[in-house]
Structures are given as C-alpha cells and as structure tokens.
Length: 470
Image (tube, rainbow, N blue to C red):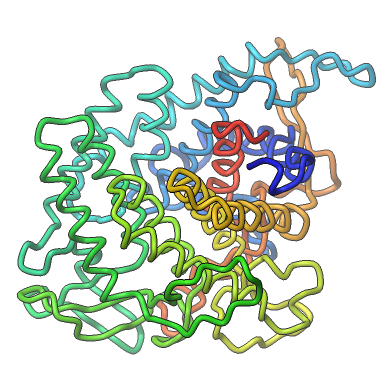
C-alpha cells in the first residue's frame, strides 16, 4: 500500500512529527494550569488569528463539548513517546544547540500532564445531558486504558457509554443529539414533538461500540449504535448524482449531508432538514460532511455492515468532488483545505473562508476507510482514499499550518520549557478553522485555530505510525 502514495510519505508529512507540535501542545498544557480562567474549570477551544487575544488559546467552560480534545492531543503525543519514540524529534544531541532533552524526560513530563488533564474527564462520564460524551472521554481515556491498563479509564468509558445510551429513544431508533435548538431565526424546544439529530453524532458511536467489546451488556450498546447509524442514513444523507473526475472513483451512490435533522420521536419520521453551523439548510457544511465520512467508516469497522461502508465511500467521493471542483481562485495554495461550507457564497476571493478542521477530520475518515477497503479486498479504492487522505494533510501542513513556530529548551533546574522561534507566537498548530459561521447562530466565529482540528491532525500522524506507513 505504501507504494500507492509514493515512497516519500514520511517526508511528505514530516511536519506531523516536528518538534513544533510537541512544543506548542506542551506549552498550552502547562500555561493553562494558571490564570483566572484555567484548568480544570476551563479547557482550550480556539486560537484567534486577529484581535487583542490573537495567538493565545481562548479557554471554554469545562462543560463544553470540545473539552476532551486537548487531553486527547496530549495522550496522542504520550503514545508516540511510548510506542514510537523515534517519531519524537527532540533537540538532544544537536551540535548547534546546547539543549539536552532526552526522550525519557519527555515521556515522564507527558505522563504527568496526561494524568492531570484526564482527571476531570472521569466525572464527566456520568453526564446524560450531552450526546458528545464520546468526544469528551474517548480521545484521552481510550489511550490511557490501552497504554497503561488503567482500569479506572476503562470503567469511565463504559460508564460514559451507558450515559449516552440513556438518550436513546426506542420509538425513533436513535439517540437524541440536542434537547433544544436555539437560533436567532428558529427555536425548537418541545421534546415530545421534536427530536434533534446532528451528523456529528456519528462520531460518538465509537464510544458505544468500544464499550460494547468490554462489558457484559455490550449487545445493547452495540444495537443502539447500529440503530442510530441506520436512522441517519435516511435522515441526513442526500443522494447526489455521481460526477467522477477519474476512473478510480467509487462507483456507487454519492451523498451530501445536512447538519441537523428534526424527526418525530414517536415514529422516527423525518420532519425537517436544517443547519446550525452551515450556510443554509440545503447546503453542505464541510465539517459535517467530514464527520459523516469518519463516523460511517468507524461504524463499518465495528459492524462490518456493507451499507455503512457504502455510505462512507459515497460521502468521501462527494467531499473530494467538491474540493476538486471549487472555483479556480481557491486553488492558489489550498485547493484541498476545505471551504467552510461548499455552497456558501465566497465574499473575499483573495481569502476564501475555510475550515481546516474539516480537512483533518476528513483525512482521518479516509484513512480509516482505506484500511476497511484494504481488508475487504478493494485495493484500488483503498489506495485512492489513502492518497487523498495524505493529500489533504499535506496541504493542511503547507497552507494552513501556523508559520509561528516553537521549540523545546532546557530551563532552570533542567525543567523543559518552550520558546518561540519566530517573532510572534501562535498556540495552535493549524489556522483557518471555522467553528460556526451561520448567520443566525447566537455565537458566530471564524478564522482561528481549533482544538479539534489540531487533535485530528496529531491523531492522523499516530494512525500512520500504527499502520506502519511512516
């Protein structure tokens, strides 16, 4: 499979393992422990690119759905230090530098930070007020369990899965995503008449499938996840006419997605397709499409149900098609860094609004999809999605990676510290993320680094390592 992407794959994505990534995440982990808004009451969410707080993480209340991604990034780096130490590029031994930081020091520091940052997640596992509990606990606690055998982390994963299962509505066959939908132009509050499902929910099903493998009542969790994924096939996926641009495209149906669906909780019937973070109800929000790709690829890996594999392929093809048919002015340096919504008007041709996080999420989804297809004997299609996943990440690194860089240094008492290697600093790894640019949203913000964009970028690097591709 390596030959399908070229023998220089490691070179093409070498920045995934650069000292800069370790340094930035390490610094955020330490400096977020002090200050007025600090851990454990607040977690990193986004890094503004302009304004008074440009370059520094804005921390969000711990209850917000993004709180699990930064601990996940720390654990991904810790996994590298334990399982793939050669991937950790450190300054020790460099003739031009006096620093002498060894891998043992980094492993120990990361272990301590991982323990600190994962601690609040255990209590959150009991939350039944959110469908995002998978995003909250899985990035960190799954790796903690797998790397250390920490039974506490596995117990919290299982408890979180059971918490998520309480949101399942049997008459609808799905898990309620949100209790309410509140926008400037729309309010949905009656839960007896309405049930809100969002495409993001597909990526929380991995929690249910993982817990199902590790507990006695696993079949119920498995069935809930599979039922939910089946419902979203008809509530969120919109069939599109295939328009192949190459001979190696998937030959089955292609799909776009809506962000939000409102179904009848008593019957599961579709009432409306809507959006909360995309441009319009009928548009294709890029990050939603990426969540769909990854969610259905993961669901296939857990179920081996062909319908889910076909859905993931159809979603991936439409995503690729929209990237490759974007207006010519989008090509300048960043064709494969997605526009924030594939159908939104472009207000500034010189700087189209993008969402780099959609690219890093989609790349992970296509990498999982490539693995699934390889195992199914679909080698040509597997190679296509591997090539595309690498292309997405390569362009993210070339176009969206913050030019502001940092490095590790030895401080007083031989403690590890971080210093900028550029005149200004930027806490995030990627720029050009868009959290929510919907005109009717009560909080509209764009053009920043996003904690989940960075997490999925780092995790992509780890997936390549686990696959033995770098």
